[in-house]
Image (cartoon, rainbow, N blue to C red; front, side, top):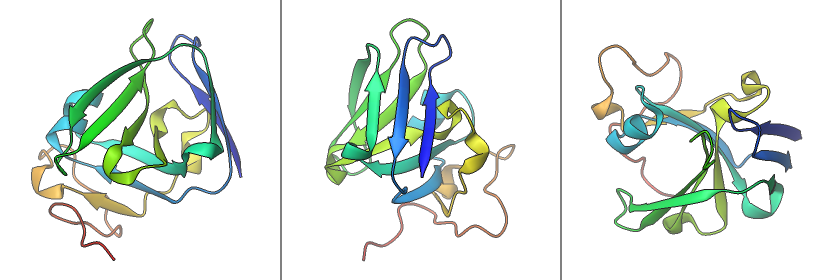
Length: 136
């Protein structure tokens, strides 16, 4: 599968070659702050599947795992392009809203739904977890 995307101003572009590992929605407070809305939709891929052109700035903050999460964004327009949680080494989580065709993404789960705001609830028919799902 090939997908392309980029930031709002066009200074950062990316190309994805390969199948996503998973796609999902996150309703945690950090994702709400990052997006300025009720949730974030991500597409998780192996780092090697993503080729990025353009300069990025990184903001690092500990995630719910207690381990650092790097968020990379365009320094010109502020669009967040991806996150890389150190708890999932080797995985790039592309922000689905930056895809040229975001309709290609089909979230398979929703996490941290206990923190969802009343005006942005998880979609029906998609498995939802109050916090993180059990591993394994």
